[in-house]
Amino acid sequence: MKFGILKERKNPPDRRVVFSPDDLAKLKQLYHTVSVKVESSDIRIFSDLQYKSMGIDVTTEISDCEVLFGVKEVPISDLIPNKSYFFFSHIIKKQPHNRKLLQAILEKNIDLYDHETIVDAHNRRLIGFGRYAGIVGTYNAIRAFGIKFELFKLPKAETLSGKEALITHLKRVVLPPLKFVVTGTGKVGNGAKEILDAMKIKEVSVENYLTKNYTQPVYTQIDVLEYNKRIDGKVLDFNDFHNNPEEYVSDFEKFTKVSDIYITGHFYANEAPIILTREMLQANDCKIKVVADISCDVNGPIACTLRASTIADPFYGYLPSENKEVDVFHPAAIVVMAVDNLPCELPKDASEGFGEMFMEHVIPAFFNGDKDGVLQRAKITEKGKLTPRFSYLQDYVDGE
Image (cartoon, rainbow, N blue to C red; front, side):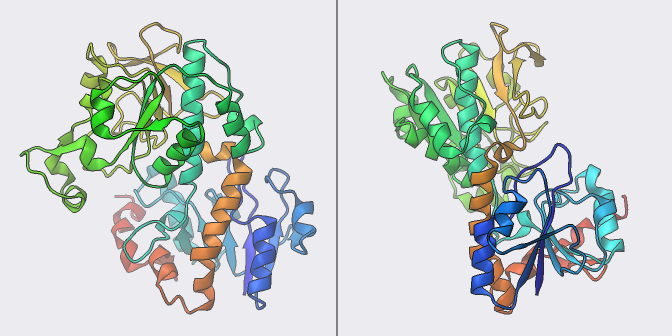
């Protein structure tokens, strides 16, 4: 079997990669029937030389590879017909801007696997960059607070060597007794927790968070049933919320009254209630000063996320009274951080972590007959058609 590692061609440039040089050396050691080629790249976080030093073939010609691995979408003009591709395609929610990409994939008889659709038998995602989004997003939240209140200056995450350097800088910061609320207990939420724990910020129970004052910074991490409630007042389980999100309404307001910094790490389904509403933000007793919207669903569950921001310009001000963007230093502004590609700021750590997950959960499936169905579940297109699992995308393909 021939694997090819793609050069990233999307703009803005993405320095991440699915496999580090160490991963590929390990792959060749474990599976002797595999040959690997890496497409030469001048932007990748690992240099061509680092791959070559591990005995990996670096080349400009990868059309003889059967399976091609990338991070971001492959431009239509660069798609090679009759291959298998792995990348984040951003099509499974019928994103309008990528309809032509899916149409081209079908026309070119490509088997597409999306990193987002690589799930276990219970539909839990097996790989992703979420942890690193949580890590960088939390760093940026604290950086935003320092800038807004002119208390301290942290360097941009992308200028630092990695996660440990981020933590070193954060440990030098002296914070007032802030309260941080983190929504979500998945990879993103736990990435946020990792940073708060590394800073020795104390974790407290929801009850204590809501009712007690502290002389030191504290945080609480909450799951969907702690910030949503059924409209009819019944208390049910997570499965009920998952199956009937339209029966719920946000119960987040109690957190807005006591929280200084809100870090979002939740998963958001289309029918789920808005979490942080305009009314909550406009309330006189809303204490929130910074919202780090790591999930970054524009026009989604966080009312102050008016647009995605960028690594180059990560912060903007939100004026609740007028529901509009203003300067960060406007006295009534809440600072919003809504960068939608946060792991790009830690390309080395993110790539190494992603590769480890891929080696553990996906690569064995190529050699064990896909006994756990990982590849089968992840496959969106096959032989010019949508697979049954993704047949719901047909009207999207047809342009309806």
